[in-house]
Image (cartoon, rainbow, N blue to C red):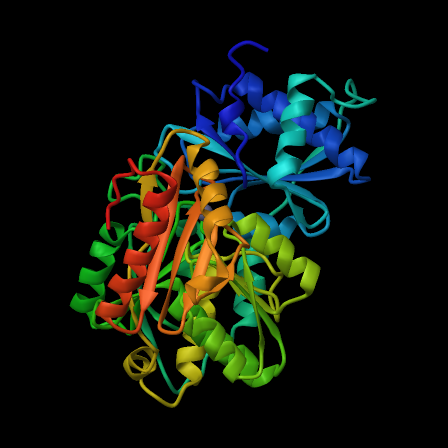
Length: 461
Ligand SMILES: [Zn+2]
């Protein structure tokens, strides 16, 4: 098909500009394909939700219409955070109309069928169905439509699950970045008994204040200022659809997700010794060390929320997370990524700890490290370069080599990572070491490897 927007069918989800690559007609066809795929897997009911984007009502209406044409029933939950959709969908099928933290004109879909989050080949299979108009046997059928109050159920389940020590009242600032978390988070934290300061909790698809992406330090500047101003114990920032969390300590220090996971892992292992915990290749070495020290099984996984979630389901691990802020609890919660629930668990953990919250954060191990460094490349070039790097890297380099997702080399005093990003045409790099000098040594090693593979690379480190 000419001009078909192949690029919107990505590794973990579907994302494109509404009115451009993602039209309402295409959304309806994707709905038909999703319905056909669900029916082929023996699922007859699709839960449909959407985040707070301006195009949300139109796109979700189009998708729901397509699903019903396939003969599948639709349960419309309206505007809700992605984790509320996950909870509502359970073993049914679910589609969340969201473009996470993308710019306001974009929209897209996160899809799950019978507990599996669609990624990679499964998303390509949806694309094939759309391209070939393979909408199944019953494509003229009309599924039924009904509504469900998933938001209320989600809120009730969360406040029923979390128990805060009433002796230790917490004060926190929540920054919803005008994303859909604003529809539920203020109520949840108040009901839990926290003194809650709200920042940008009005849902507004124009994102007028800052980009709802807590992995970028510039998007945490308002939260840092508010935490200091109000003397809060910590600050929590959610991304546009509420499945990711960013945390700021009382003094404004950003607690990156791998250090946060370390706190959660220790707590979970104190109750469930021997539990398996999953983390992505970008995480600090301190995390697997702490997991093993506390008697757990540390499993490294490739980056990508759908990969992590599917690995969690496959292994039955009790907890998982990645550097991007997707955090999954599978001990008392449903094993899906949920930024709001993760913040509530942090409240529970801090309230139960005899130390002051500031001391808990201060006791976390730290290292010299870089954030994710992205080196833009031509589409596909990043994957070719990583393949060449993997072929050239030898064990004689004195490091433990991991090839789960790109090349990760763990040295006695640090690690380096070079992988192909799945969300942008770029090489993704990260480094960590005990000291600045060791970090530079590891970077020099990667510089040598990279330049040996591509002599003309302009490296930003
Ligand atoms: Zn998200």
